[in-house]
Image (tube, rainbow, N blue to C red; front, side, top):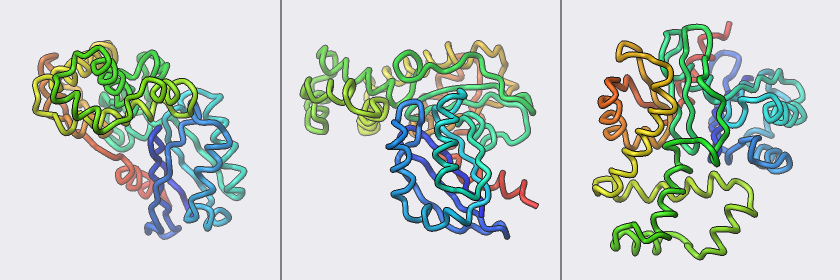
Amino acid sequence: MILIADGGSTKADWIAINSDKSEAFRVRTLGLNPAVVAEEELNNRIINMFQLINVKEDVTEIHFYGAGCGTLKPAKILEDILQAIFINAEINVAEDMLAAVYAATGAAPALVCILGTGSNSCYFDGENVLMNTPSLGYILMDEASGNYFGKVLLREYYYKKMPAKMMLKFDEEFNLDADYIKQNLYRKPNPNMYLASFAKFMFDFKEEAYIHKIIRNGFKEFFEYRVLPFNKTSETPLYFIGSIAFYFRDILEEVAENYKLKVTDVIQRPIDNLLEHHRNKMV
């Protein structure tokens, strides 16, 4: 049995494939980003999912693509945890950018971007994933991601820049006590997930000019830092992965056009495409 996982900071989607290429089951765990989640918690999030534990001795390969797995130390942490649980499996841990490439373009050159809880981008030349710059995560980077927009909304609320009717709705939906917010940001695990939870507020007010401006400005920042430096033209396919890109595709396409680029496709969740990629590689 082979396990394939697309692991974001908020959630991780898993698919198990039998040796005859048939799908055995699907399951979703909490996010497994080893750069921000403690080792004990990473382990607990896996072993508490009974579907995974029930097959732990039957799994021969694991292909885990995850946020926070782009550098050696966190990737090794997750690899060791998986190896200790799935003792008969060959473990392959790679960054989520590679999953995005496999899901979006396969073997064809393209610009591939992630806009989910976090954000990232790369150029795939048909063989190699080329990064313009490493990601330093939610505090310094992650432009136009869920956690980026969460920070914007919280600041706008506290500085009273948000329209009055939205402030009332925002106050109804979230606990906005300053001590509670600071506790979640500075004392509790997964502050990036916490910040991203506020981004869902934008979906309800998507047509409002105020929200449209926030989203458009975030996308412009992403393009300027994460897309334009690759110096590609509209002839290069441009793919986006993730819920932020999926739900705000119209604004994304508008911003792309302003930079004389064209969005080829937006994929909310890449796991189905990853399934086909690995099925095609099976003997």
